[in-house]
Image (tube, rainbow, N blue to C red; front, top):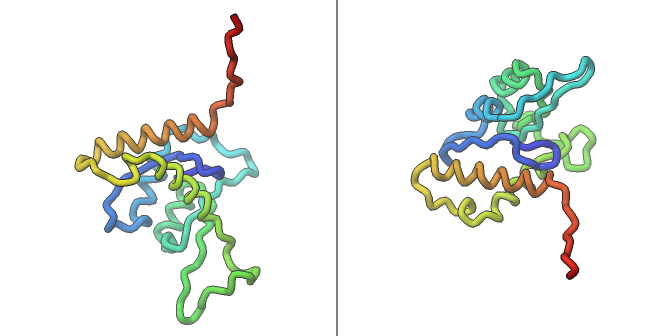
Length: 147
């Protein structure tokens, strides 16, 4: 899970054969920063891809007080509109893909060599901390000593 700039907010590991929609509750619970309650008219939004287009995911988002933005899956009766059609759901997946590319810069995470999940999760969390620090830390000017 990332924020609007791609900065990681939560990380959950699962097997490659487990569908992402089954892990939605775990991801929402994994956010470690206390989210302040929304203002009266403020709404919290959750942007998901077509893989999360299930009643369970929509109900879970509503239960958490989030406005879910999930594009509909294509069916034979209702195919996807063309990309230029105004009824087509706007693409927003690139935000998460930016976060994934930041994780891919860490060689130990790009190819998983660790057999134990705890070790791999530790390195993923360390990489998350480094990514957050790099994106949020102010750039301090470098001072030289004149002697």
